[in-house]
Amino acid sequence: MELEVYPVTAERWPDLEALFGPKGAYAGCWCMFWRLERGEFKQLKGEGTRAVLQEMACDNKVPGFLAYDESGAIGWCSAGPREQYAALENSRILKRVDDQPVWSVVCFYVAKNARSQGVMYALLRGVVAYAGQQGARIIEGYPIDMQTPKLAGQKLTSYAGYMGVASVFRDVGFVEVGRASETQLIMRYTIS
Image 1 (tube, helix red, strand yellow):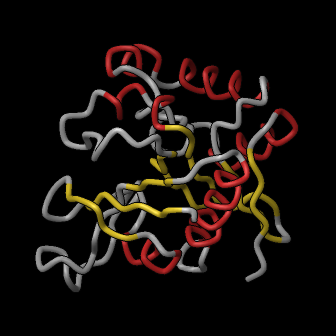
Image 2: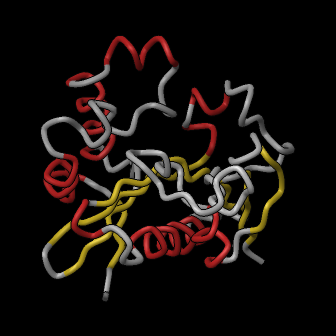
């Protein structure tokens, strides 16, 4: 499948809104779970989180990336400098590995009819290319590793892979630098 990936800016907001649908992708999240402090997220969830994401897009703050095929937008990835993700910065589980500045890849959403077709791979490649153009040297992700003994042979259910799948990160060139848990890795791509 031939896919194109673009940063989300004001002109792409209608495409993102159409992809996420009226419920905002994952139950009203609108991809704000990692961006906002937990209390603020709970208070705003739904229409409030949609408004925050729309404001970011319409102010051309590039809150993430869209993947397109000939039918339109079929996938989303939230990525940017780690310090833009308040809940991630405060996470006890996904603590910083070191003091290096990183771009974080925190969320994927792929339309049901486009899953298992390389959309996550295309989005991740697009993020790496764009982050490099913006001066980033390290891109970091927190995917689930379906190859761990605990998950071996299982299939993803519901939104379990929203932070990505480790095999896709490996295929793009990310390497494991830590573990948040038995099944969740911390992986990095270093631009030389």
